[in-house]
Image (cartoon, rainbow, N blue to C red):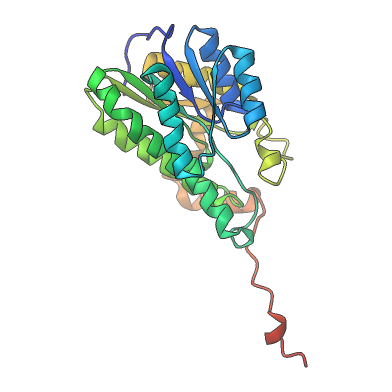
Amino acid sequence: MQRRGPVPLRDKVVLVTGSSAGIGRAVATQFAARGCRVLAHGRDPERTRRVAASIGAVPLVADLARPDDRRRLIDAALARYGRIDVLVNNAGVGWAGPLTDMTLEQLRQIVEVDLIAGMELTHAVLPAMVARNQGSICFVSSIAGRTGVAGEAVYSAAKAGVDMFAESLRAETAGTGVHVGVVVPGVVRTGFFDTRGRPYDRSRPRPVPADAVADAVLRAVTTGSAEAWTPGWLRIAPAVRALAPGPYRWLSTRFGEQVRVQPPRPHPSRSGAS
């Protein structure tokens, strides 16, 4: 476990992706409040600039689904401050429904934004961090990546990829002075569920505020923790899945999201109708 004494944050250069709303906005706000020089990334120009202005950050607009935009984001960040001390890979998109209802474009967007973008940004900033013997890379993952969620197959897979990427990278960077951490939230009170196409309409578990996730990110960065869970009891679900996979799968099918793939509808030309 990468633990260390508390790291002072003042004047650290922090790049937060997906900071125009929700978790990212809360994370950027908390880093700015602690005297960091925050680079606030977002896809929507107006919202990104508005959030950045409200916290004294530098707005950086980019669509992380596009490889060229990802490169431009890093170039713009380095052009402004010359270095990145903390990278928070938070940006993410979701989609709710059975896999067969997704388009390939939607599938690719989730993988590009939720998984590949974080990998590429990390690949860009890591060499300089290793050369300086300091730095922190924090990934905002999801409980979906630890358990799998019906109706969110691609999102769950992307977040599982984030977890394993971070785990492997943590071993690769051992002894370099670079911290790699993962924050695992459950349901968070943001607009994420509305934008994914289906609102969160369950009474349990109750959504946690975005500030709680931001607290976990700051805690991971300042203490060098490998993982932080929000809320903490979420650790139970993957533990049960590991110890009793059969009963866990039965319970999740019986009481989890009731989302099922459907057989394809017959094409009119093949229906037999004359």
